[in-house]
Image (cartoon, rainbow, N blue to C red; front, side, top):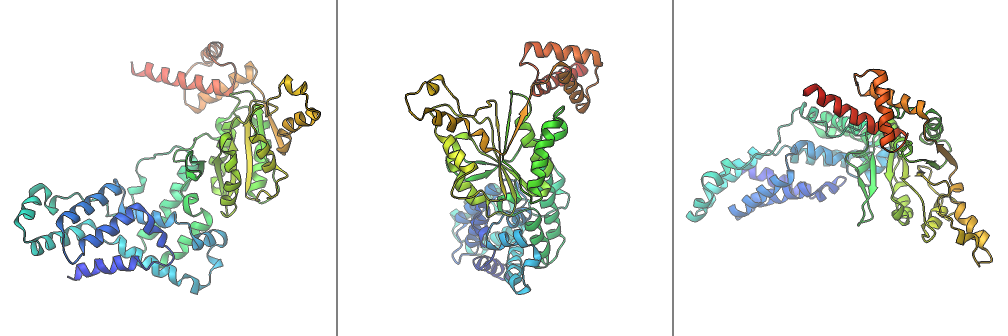
Amino acid sequence: MEKITYLKRVSTALQGLLVFDDILRENKIKDFYKLLRTVTEPNFDMEKVYLAYHNFYRSLAGDNWVEYIIECLCTVQNEFTLRAARTGYNGFAPSNLQDVARDLAVIQSLAKISPQNLLEIIEQRFKNEVKIKEVHAIFHDSLSPENWPIWNWGFSLTDNDSIDYCRAEACKWLDKQRKNLIISFIQEPNWKNNIVNLVNFYYEIGCGIYGKYGAFKIHDSENKLVGIKNPDPIRLKNLICQEREQAIVLNNTINFLDGYSANNIILYGNRGTGKSSLVKALLNEYISKGLRLVQLKKNQISFFPQLIKILQEIPLKFIIFIDDLSFNDEEEDYKSLKSLLEGGVEARPDNVLIYATSNRRHLVKESFADRQSDDVHSRDTMEEKLSLADRFGITVTFLSPDQETYLKIVEELAVQNNLNIDRDELRQRALKWVMMHNGRSGRTAKQFIDHLSGTLNREKTS
């Protein structure tokens, strides 16, 4: 009875969470809570217990239960965590943190419940309270509680050093910060004493999904922000012979991150010249300085005002990335974008910039019909279309490399990929490749190196 009473105390205390009650909306915690209630019901129903137990086991899907609970603390977004993200620990009086300490003690009691604890109680109640022979006949042998699966619970400090699921530096950095916080909880006997570390995490890393992901996109059907699990791992060092272009973009980005005035940027040039790669590489370079990247498709521009309202409340820096931006003469979204860039009623918040790429110098397609229009204000109409690019404060032009620059890119990528090949042979193969493929560009060089790497590795094993 004492063990059952403990479970009842925990399930009751969970309903009294004051600061972190958000975690009760997490599906896995909801499933565990339902399991606790089912196991401790006055009228013990073995079938219901069996279903609740296995439903929770499936929902956990191999995660470590203790680690998952701590991760929920990392990704909660509410008034407390947002305030912590803005002000840090010094923004709270001791009395403000009493409810936090109380909640952490309750959540720790939840984490202490092991599958072995539950199975022991289930087996005892089954033997002592279930008198129907048919039920005993069903939950026998393989269906006996002693043979039910055991989820991961006993946390080891080496558990987080397992498989590296994401190659992007931004992911690795965020994962390391969460790992450090998880370890601080595991090593602390009383979780309520870990408030400083938790608040510092919100302040230095972020809260909600912004503490879990570095890159985001807009869900196609639900118009909400979702994290990108595996963003592009591209680094600035992988973008060769791009010094001029990088210097302009990096200077503007650093000003932005350091709280100084900065401009929206349009990156214009031929395909394959590294425009998009440069923007995506910024995340992997500056994630630790509070940068986050939000990918916005052209057909999602109407969501921009709503997106701005969401991001301006988050104390991080966001670059909204619009790739391959251009409009035909029938599309009207360019008018909305012009207003958003400059001249709208609602000002763009200081923590948001727009970086867009385009293969077209004039972002709105201009036709001869525009020039020959019967509209008495046709010139004004044409100028309105052509002025969109001017709304970006900075235009960075990317040029296709000449032959020697292309070969220099190839040679540097070969070094970065540890390819052991004679320089003259490398150059000859690279020139042959470019004649049969997409012309000289950084992208073509990368595609050639990927092909060559696979070929050479295959030759080694044959």
